[in-house]
Image 1 (cartoon, rainbow, N blue to C red):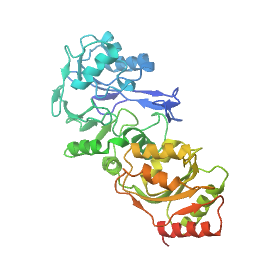
Image 2 (image 1 turned 120 degrees about the vertical axis):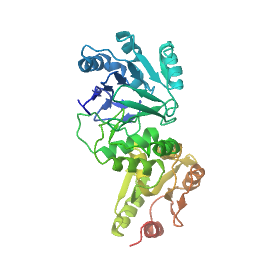
Image 3 (image 1 turned 90 degrees about the vertical axis):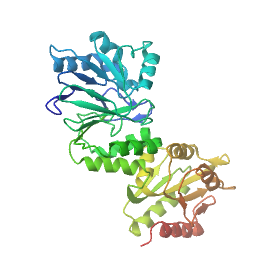
Image 4 (image 1 turned 180 degrees about the vertical axis):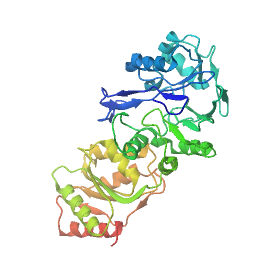
Length: 385
């Protein structure tokens, strides 16, 4: 696939995979993206997952024809992008590897070989001339590994963005970019918002007309839309107004309170009410919604003097990713000693800029008239008519 006259896509689609990184459901598979720049000198940008070595090398050969590559650029050392470095160098032994110093150290750890001998170590602002194309390298530590670099081609105005702007899903699947990119971002990159902000600041002066990520489609239109979403996500601002109600329920009584709250919010005109059963949902999608919307209700039972395990897992996912700048409310249920709100508040105590509602809901055994009044008051505080 031609991206520009001289830049070619040589990535692969993976439909064998069920869990990306061993935890994220990917029903539409994954893409592992790799690119070739054909110029006076030739650069191959990144490799692919080890399972697709032969398919990838065949695609590279088809683009190269009788020519040999001069450079192999390793933007990111995660194995779904770097696993075939050694295999590539067996096929093209005269190729110089281009990477950050930390990436070369990781290569030695993965392959037992010091590829820096004869390689090119690049740092922030370094350039590599291929002829018409000149790549400028930008360090992007912790987006989302410490060795990451991105590169910008000034000739065709292309940003090779490593895992930034990536998404779940193979390229032969037609689906909306934002949904799976958002789930990917908050699942994998979300903890490192400050580092993403730093990268966006470094790249803000570039005339970017195309973004080539290591996962997902090549982005060629409305670049400001994608950059804008990344700015919103990485600054932890709510993307949309709405209320997420994440709950666990053992015998259905907490669920009744949640259903009443959701109904009242909709009656009040709340534009989005997302109700999530944490015991049955895709946890990554629950995390995605919590970061997407402006308000979050946590509803759970007291369980062994703590909270129900799926609620604890959910809050751990949020705090691990620096959940902040939201309005939070609580619904707790306890037959004899309700403790859930106290526990959840403690779990969130290090989260920044959270606003807690004055209204809370405490259920003792089952939802009664007093509990219904508390639910209605909470609905009015979260979203007034």
